[in-house]
Image (tube, rainbow, N blue to C red):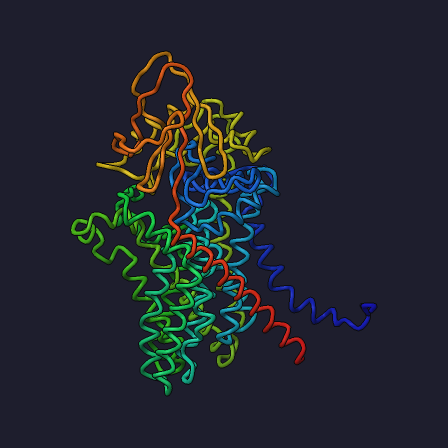
Amino acid sequence: MNFNYKKVDWNRVGMAVYPYVVILIGIYLMIRYQILTHSVLLSSDALLHFQRFYETKMQIKTGNFSYFQTNFAFSHSGRIFNAVYAPFLAYLGGLMLLIVHNWFNFQILTIFIVLLIAGIRMYRLALKAKVDELVAILLALLYLQFGIPAGILRFNFMAWGAALAPYAMMQVLYMIEDRKKPIHWLSMALIMSLLAQVHLLSTVFIACTYVPFAIYGLVKTTEKKQMIIDFLKAIGTTLVLTANIWGAMLVLFVNNKIALPNQYNLIYHTVKYKPTTNIHGALLFTMVILLVFQLIYVLTHLRQNVTNTLITFVAMIILLISSKAFPWARLQALYPRLGSSLQFPYRLMVGAWPLLLLGIGISMTYLMKNVKFVNVLVILSLVFAFGQNLSANYAVNRARSLEFLNPHHVVIIQSYSKITKHRKQLKHVLRYSNSGKLFKLINHLEPDYLPYTKHASNLTYQKQILDQRKHYHYAVDGSKLILTWHSKKTQKRTLPIVMYHQSRLTLNGKQMTKLKQNTITQPIIKAKKGKNVATLQFMTPTWFKILLVISIVGWMLLLFYGVYVKQKKVSLN
């Protein structure tokens, strides 16, 4: 069957494609300087996630798979990370790293993917709410330029959650506007499961964002019983699709003391106005003006559009809670662990930012349709906001790229890292390889998800694991990590690995049952004179393997169902 190009309506194709081309151009403009200078922006976040993806890359490359225990990355310490932090995405990232050959390509491609998803989903959300198409495109571009999505420029993983957040907020529109079916259970289960597989904390915050809209939907719906049934179906489906996530959390946290991430002062990481920067919780002048405009508009048009009113009020309340106006210092004094679990109050805005932009789009669309000569003013205001935020992002990206190019710096954020003096070598490895040599030149010190007996600290992890690895030879066999070393005499030795409740250690062919451990559960063993071989393996419970299979099968069935529905629609058309 020959394809007839003459029958294609290329104007229609162009009109359908151009919004996505514009979004791509917007992303390129953000990181243009980094691309042209071949720079890798290595922050502490980037280093952490590079190790995660390197681990899965090596598992794929060698065929030695280990779902829980890390055998290649994190200094061959055997610590657990990927199993409780986006495991499926980690394997996709590892495959991508294997294909693209170097860290520079990997970082640039990741930034493009995250921001493209974020932009497209924001654009589609705006269209769903009947926002003017040009306004929708500008809102999509603006969404990429500030707050949490822009955090991907320093490889902050919250940006992955923010990329999917506009898709999650489509459920809010159903809850408000669909009186017969406020909960579309399958699409809700899909987005919440995707979020959990990508960034679990984003799932929690977005679920909290749903609550007031779900209450409104329940009050207004004519099918209350069906809504409750659909809600339960969504929960059940989500539990199936995320069985590997909550199952791994049970494995890890029930029988182990696990270190939380480093503590932060909550009050310093709230949403606030800043004149020159717009990443994470910072807002530039133009964004503040847009938010003030939206609040005034809704207050003066309360009954004009119930969707606009509800999403604006709920999002503004979340904004207030996320700001300095909320007593975060007092709350942290009462609950100190919030400094490790929440860390940054601006994270609460992950679902609220798309809602606020959507509200701005709805208001501006109404003005364009009903007020003369306002069209140009609306478009110019959004273009100006986009321009100011883009300029700020470009300036930061350029400054960080220049740090990479500086032979005395290379690394842009040096906290919580142990870094080589050979910075030129580090730069070469980042640009032209995807090897583990990177982690011999720089390594991450934070003890996230590290087991402990009394306490876990950056200093202990550095001295007892990072500084000791040079004395050992490492090999991997299946899911087993093998350490080999020579001892001049019989002596006690602390091995540079960590042990969880489910870990098993074999020393010179003998399984060790009664082991002394230090504060971060490193085994203290008695080495014989001469060659010694220690083997570490994480014993995965059978019940978790069943949950993992259930999760994978669930995703496969969902994929097949999606293909079936798509083919059915095509055949009907």
